[in-house]
Length: 99
View 1 (cartoon, rainbow, N blue to C red):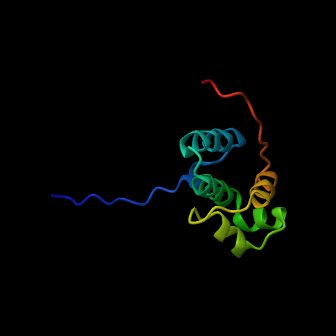
View 2: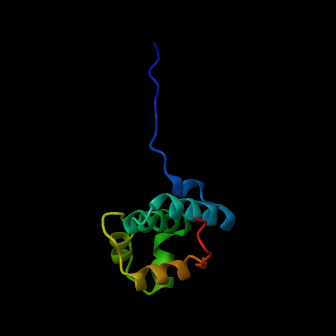
View 3: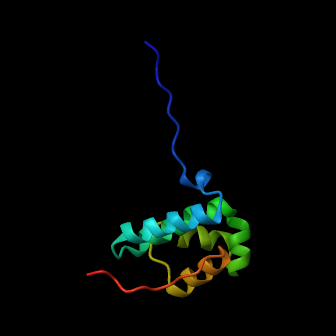
C-alpha cells in the first residue's frame, strides 16, 4: 500500500490577483464574527502573498513587528490595521447590515 504524502496548505500561495485578495479578505471579515485576531491573521496571509518586507516598508513598520501584529495571536491596534490595509492597496468600505 502506498503512503499518501500531504503538504501544508498555505493560502498565501493562492492569492495572486487583487480580486482574489479582496474576495479572501471579504470572506474572512464575514467569518470572523468580531474576532480581530482572525482578521489580523487574514491580513498576514495577504501580506505574505505580497511580500512581507515590502508591505512592512510601505506601512512604515518593521518586518518583525508586522509579523507579530498579523500572527493571529493578538489583536493589533486599529492604526496598524489601517496602515497595513493601505500598504496592501486595499480600501475599507461600509454598508448597512441586512438584519
